Length: 373
Image 1: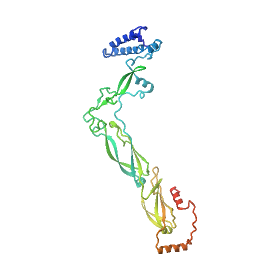
Image 2 (image 1 turned 180 degrees about the vertical axis):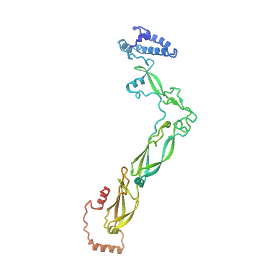
Image 3 (image 1 turned 120 degrees about the horizontal axis):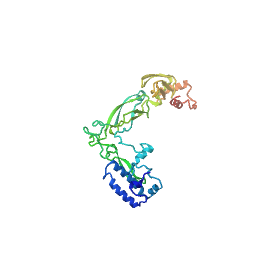
Image 4 (image 1 turned 120 degrees about the vertical axis):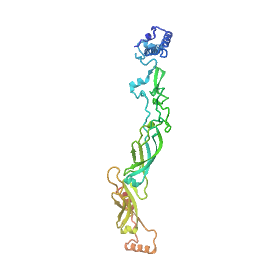
């Protein structure tokens, strides 16, 4: 243990007044402002530590019983010990608050923007322009933050350390803690002449347009990750990433189910009964579609490989065409007579009107078509 009585030059039976008187005398003699030098500073620390123990009734009693409150180590105590040093020993540097100035450059934030694309672009892919408001590196100071022709300077308050030490009294005695320097905000440097363009931030707000490559097969909710296309960080730091979330706009003709496209073609009753050939416009150009004789409402014609490109993998979905057979609602006298004659010929003048099975009717066919059956 340290011999605190010897450090103060008093007997073990000294009264509190004698201990205080001896400490004041030695403190005036050894104080760094009066007696500069490492040896005097070391003696001053020992004297201060000794008085911290012997000047407190409880600590002196523990010391006289053989327990040194400071474990025999006096370095850094008395004038204030560094709490961050102890925390670092137990928990590592991060728990102690870190050492040295913090970096001025920081990584920029990631961004999320929405982009609408049409269905044809989703089918085949393509490119599309996107305009965003973001932060870019200042071209005037190249991200440095200082006005061209000037430079940063070491902070005079903290000497470039980025932190200042403060002494506080606690139950352990005088505790020395470190706080970020208010003059330089912990950077260790100051900018006497900030850039007029970015006000010392090293970045400026701007609007820019970029070309986005849209992969084939995307759908609403698909996100495209663009590395390094987000905001530039403070101090000209590295840019974050940009995420583009896509929304596929509705198409007037086609609807999408997975990677299949669905469309409806209107057929007059006579064409459905007799069969015909139609010219159907697809994303791949015009296609001849054969309508079989006796086509029923809800029947489907599948054009393989004319749907949406698979986003992952090769190939494409199908184009499914649904027959929408239209029954005439307005007939002249000759047309009505022709239909009556047809009904007689087909013995349909008094139809039975039997209920059809759920899966055999128009709605059943339509439901199965959309389920991929």
